[in-house]
Length: 209
Image (cartoon, rainbow, N blue to C red; front, side):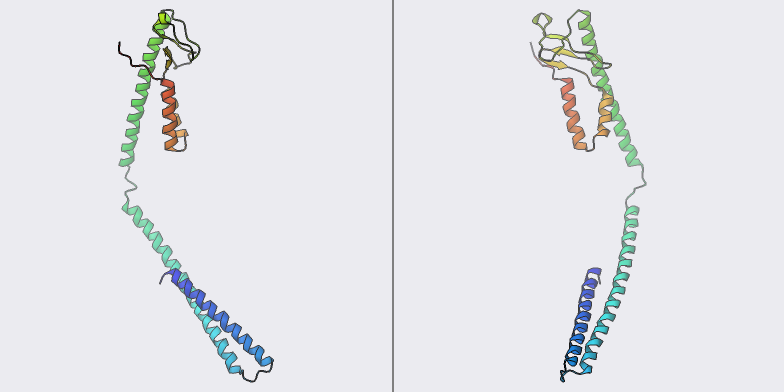
């Protein structure tokens, strides 16, 4: 029998004991009040019912305690079975995932470095040709520069070129990789970083002439 059913039986038995005691007290009061129709036998009968119900309560309480001990043991055993069923100690799955992460990091870092080298080359060549640096995003390079110019202040590893109304920039791979672990939720990580990359890299016009 499950614990819930035993608890229902316990509630019933406790109610029976309380009702029998209340009836015995009521009968005693009738005797005190001079009711000749009530005998001590009736009082004792109700008291006997109460005692019997009390014994049932104790019996059910023991059964509940035993059932709880059994349920606890079964729950512990089930956890052990679950642990033994799942190959939780097998490191190969996680090692494989770790290698996937390594490959992804290398690919991302390499792409970022190649991007930085390319933009740096464009910027350096433009500066060598004495093309003036643009200082604000709302400026447009003049037509005699073919709509391109170096752009902004250059911090270490950050290079930018202005082309028409678009800023072509670079990204620092280390920043994005660290941000992946700073953000609390995967959805926030991806969404926030995608927006940052699009903003930083810009959109180079694809014009056919």
